[in-house]
Every structure is written in structure tokens, then in C-alpha cells.
Image 1 (cartoon, rainbow, N blue to C red):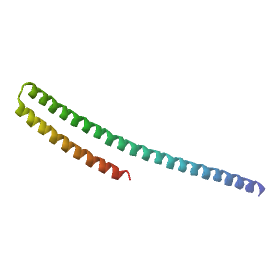
Image 2: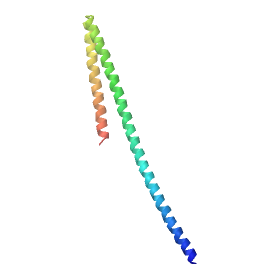
Image 3: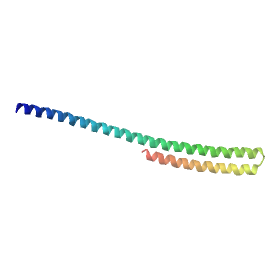
Image 4: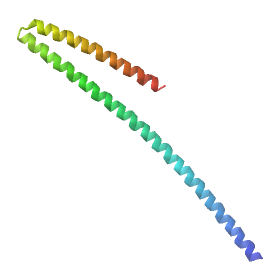
Length: 112
């Protein structure tokens, strides 16, 4: 009977150890899950920022093309075309500024 009681105590101790190990494993899994979620959020933010940079680069390229065409028209003394291109550039800048302001407002409200 004493031997059986000793075995039972030993089994209880082992079960407690296993229970504690399982708790530690669950805590570790929860911690890893939180880190993965934070990384996924950061990746999404980086994708959004990358897309914004790509769009801004395209906008800059469009502006430069128009500026070069304006310069070329003035160089050729074609002031009518230069005036039309200048107006187109102004409109493009206005439109792009409105879009950028709208994107910034959306970004600011999503970070609150």
C-alpha cells in the first residue's frame, strides 16, 4: 500500500509538471500569435505606404513630362501650346493635391 501511495504521489507530481508545461506552451503560442498579428499589420502599412510612394512617383513623372513639353513649346516659340500645357499642368497639380489631401485625411482617421 505504501508503494502504491508513493507511485500515486509521483504521478501527481508528474501531472502537475505536465500541466505547468502545457500552460507555458499555451502562453508561448499566444505570444507568437500576437507577434504575427503585429507583423501582419506592419506589412499592410508598408504595402500602403509603398503604393502611395508609387502613386506620388507617377504624379511627379506626369508633371515633369508636362513641364518638359511647356519648355519645348516655349523654346519653339509656340506660346499657344505652351499656355494650354501650362493650364493642363495647373489642373493636374490641383487634382493631384485634392487626391493627396483626401488620402491623407483617410489615413489620419484610420490611425485614431
